[in-house]
Amino acid sequence: MDPETTSPITTQRNRGGGWITFPFVIVALSLAGGGWTSNLIVYLIQEFRINSIDAAQISNLVNGSTSFIPVIAAIVADSFLGCYTVVWISSLISFLGITLLFLTSAVHSLRPPPCGFDESSSCQSPTKLQFTALYTGIILASLGIGGLRSTITTMGADQFSKPKDQGVYFNWYYVATYVVAVISSTAMVYIEDNISWKLGFGLSVAANLLGLVIFLLGSRFYYLAKPEQNPYKGIARVIVATFRKWKVPLSCKSEDYYYGHDAEVNTNELAAIPTKSFRFLNRAALKTDDQTNSKANPWKTCTVQQVEQLKNLIKIFPLWSSSIFLATPIGIQSSLAILQSLTMDRRIGPHFNIPAASILVFVLISTALFLIIWDRLLMPACQRLLNLSLTPLQRIGTGHVLTVISIGISALVEKKRLNIAKSNRDLKVVPMSVLWLVPQLSVMGIGEAFHFPGQVDLYYQEFPVSLKSLSTAMIHLIIAIAFYLSTALIDLVRNATNWLPNNINNGRLDNVYWVLVVTGMVNSGYYMVCACLYKYQKAEQVNESVRPASDAEKY
Image (cartoon, rainbow, N blue to C red; front, side):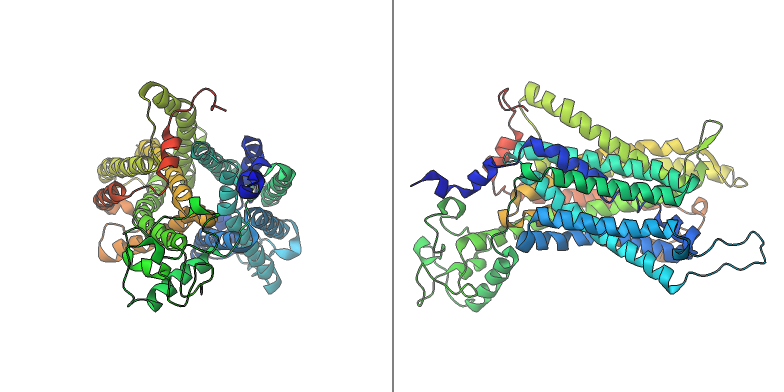
């Protein structure tokens, strides 16, 4: 048989992909949609006179939406359009939204006039047209950046056939993400606060357009994986077929199961016999009396491959759920660190004060720096000297441990801050440098350098091939759930205890941290159990990804 007719995937792979695509994808990721969310609350309050609580709620909705939208975009990419199409459409939508936000800052008729200097003069409220322009811009920009996040991640990983190269890509993906976050939280905020909103949004528009152009310039180099069918329909069919044949007895004979009419062509992709885990799902692949191996009602009889794909998703769910309770304490710790910094001495030298929100930049910097050090120095040294490397599960587990340690450091630092505050009750600013928060934030950042790339790598390797876009969107879904859950938990603590009063100098913030430490330890134990019981679905790829590269394989 002609090899070209039997290996369409290999043929497509040879037509594109590889490290030549890396600059185009990373630059597009770095520039597209950058910068506009960092200072959104201040823009809403200062320029549109929206009250602070409403502005914070709008910001919360934006942050939550830009983490949920990647899941929807992943479904569209996996089922219909493919990653490439979703990426450029999302970039275009983001460009339109940010352009509209730029116009609200540049065109006087699209924002309310400034308030008069006279205290007796009233401030004019925004008109319906002005609100429409503002909210339309926010919605479009949120849709664009949300649709871009997971699909460009998946498309970048699709350019590499080896898990080892994919792991390196995910490391640099997070380096780029965190570097952009640092720039957005510092330089962009400074420009908008001290120069003009027009310049700040203008730079965001230019960055978004440049990112889209660079991404399109790399089109001829990309490997484009096209969706063949809707994979989510296959999952639904397995569930329906299982219940339709719930009373049918299971069989131990492979010939009693349906492998599809093209089973002989795709033998390598199909299981020889259904696995024993979640055996009740095997009913979905049982043949019926009125069926031949070449034809089956897809809502009554599914292939063994479809059944095993659903089993894989179920098996990875406990690991995924543990990450929700890993990300939630991180979100709470970040919010509380800002509250701490507001009460501390933020002076660096005689003329500079660190903005309270900018204290989280130390998390971003430590993550980006450690990822670079890990990829360039530590990981090659471990492979060369010790002949070993960390699997994705081991990286995530290391992140769990470091996160608990960082929260413990937070509790100790807060105890010291409270003691100093009690000794200086007359002072509004506690005579304690805000740099005391740097160790806990740095350890948190190093923990994120382990567990976030590890999770993306794990999901990408273990999810079915047809669900690759969804695999990279799972981390965004975790962040979205953790974002809302952390808000709810802080409200619960405020209502149930006196640990978080308006003035945290009169509270017991250290107790909140200790509760998070205990919660984190329990969750880490839960993760360790799940990780020990989990068996990689593609063990040979994992072994390759952690095997030291020979000189011929190094890039």
